[in-house]
Amino acid sequence: MSLNCFTCQLCKQPLKWNKSSIPLEKLALKSTEESETGNLASAQCEAKTQKGSSDYFKDSNIEDRQNEVLSGNDRLSMDKPNHFILVGQFDSMRTLHSIQKMTVDVFDILSGKKEIDHPLCEDCTDKLLETLDTHLTILDSENKKYKICLESGESAPEGEQEALQEELKGLELEEARLVQELQELEKNRERAATDFKAAQAETRTLDQQEILNQRDYSQLQWQEMELQDELRSLEKRFKYVQDEQAQLEKMNIFSTTFDICQDGNFAIINNFRLGNLPSVPVSWREINAAWGQTALLLLALSKTIGLEFKRYQLVPCGSHSYLKSLTQDAIYLPLFCCDRNDIWLYYKFDQAMVAFLDCMQQFKNEAEKGELGLHLPYRIHVKEGLMEDPANGGKFYSIRTHMNTEEQWTKALKLMLTNFKWSLAWVSLRYRQK
Image 1 (cartoon, rainbow, N blue to C red):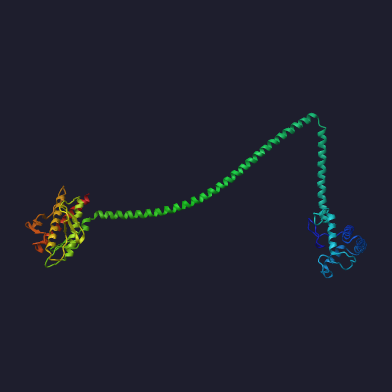
Image 2: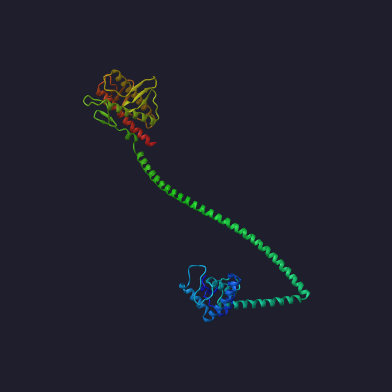
């Protein structure tokens, strides 16, 4: 603690010493030195201290002396931090610690309580005294009023006292009622607080639910956009399919699938020549492919009109098509042939072509029924295996290769494909009507 650091408790201004505090300082110093030194030493120190103190306070101001001691750092000994020896005109054994302790005790005496670290200045003390005088005046006034009320209450008549008692009971009842209402209000407040907390919890739950709903709504919007895009795409595809269907309805499916034309003495189906001439040789691979296309054509025509063949089953397999006998088991008649001089193979091939004419005759008989019946330009003789040309004097052409010429065989095949071309036109017309 520094000796020159005492400030006012209110205005925080530094305090100045007053000479009237010197006797108190002497008294505090005397009590302090007696406690530190014993009985004998305390008597000697007391005389020296009183003499030195009286001479010192007569010669100079104590405030200046204190500042002089604190400012003179070269005159203090730093060997002992807790006991400083003051040199100069202090001829006594007083230490800086004892002076500080004495000053603190003086200020404690001035303030009147140990809890206050520092005293008040003169101005703050005057303000404090004025405040206390005002408070004391108010208390005296209230005391006089209480005395007057007490005297008037004692001298009041009995009727007025009973009225006052009744009024007091009424006020007590009113107080009890108000207390009960207050308790009910407290209960209502607690209930409202509980409800408010529950409402807050529900609000948080609803906020979270709203966030989830907003997320789901965004996902649904995204799905809706995707579905709308897909719907527009499907609508465009549907429009494209409708256009394609309209074009296909106008198209002759049989004429498009099976193209039959003539090239001199040859009849051609799907670019495959059916027949052979010495001057224009045709490979058996091409002939077999042409027979496969012809078998497929006959099977498609029969299914279109709902015809089931009776004696033979037609099996189109490209270049290896054949007929299966329905009356005799395990009899296969090939509609293809190899480039060999095998009489047995040619015999089976001839039987297959005659069986094919049988199936074609069954189709003709079924197609001739009704108002829009089919009328073929060339007649078919199944048992003989012949094709008849009425426009050429009723000339016959054999469909067999055995005991026949290549020109006659090729001509018979040409007449057969011409009948198929007429059949295609008839079926296409009937299909469009349906």
